[in-house]
Length: 289
Image 1 (cartoon, rainbow, N blue to C red):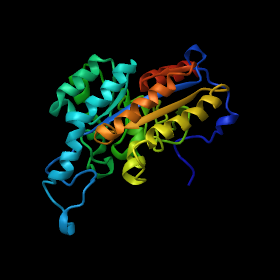
Image 2: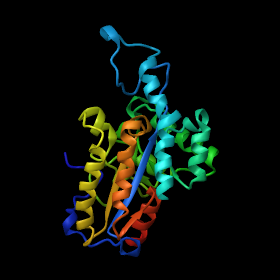
Image 3: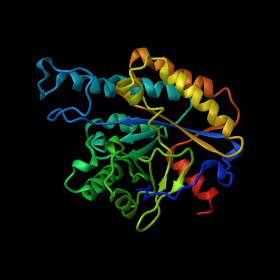
């Protein structure tokens, strides 16, 4: 019944970790860029259909998602570009083929591409998860010239075999396990796989679609999260992930609160903004691996 992928380790009992420049907190902005199949039921919905029937095509909810790629993503990118911050794009690999300009301009800005499945469908529904993982890696490698080093399952979903397969296929870190504020080495059958701390708390899906908070919540929660991690980071490094989706945080009534997060954090000394791969490289060096 215990976690089979991680040895239990209380965070305040560990040897201190030190970030570059003796920073306290590494902030990791992640933008989840997905593709939803208009020929299937939508991955999520914001508007129920009349009479409760399942609609295909579901134009209303497809349009909600598609707004994120046409408009919302570019608002998020404007904010980060203005602050000089590079994001990690958690990418459905099919976006390379369907929305290539989005991927191309992310690369031009020095953003990292992290594998997020081929399309937005949980790995548990795939008849061959290794084939999907390989297709995701190969599609991103062919478009960008570099294989992704990290992985996040659609919906953070895994089977009991997924971490072993990821390590075997050359993935170096995974973001599915939101159970720490520091990276850690996972238990896998062969190779090495590191869990880099993603978040379900500072994530716009739970905040807005499940908990139904008002627009300012993402800023208020990020501010309070940062304050605690910054205090604790004086003793040992902390990772703070900020997870957003273009169709949620990229809308006009929320985007200013995303901007306010970085205005607030950048007031503090001892903060670094890192991609997932940069966090991985730091952690590997800090733990002499």
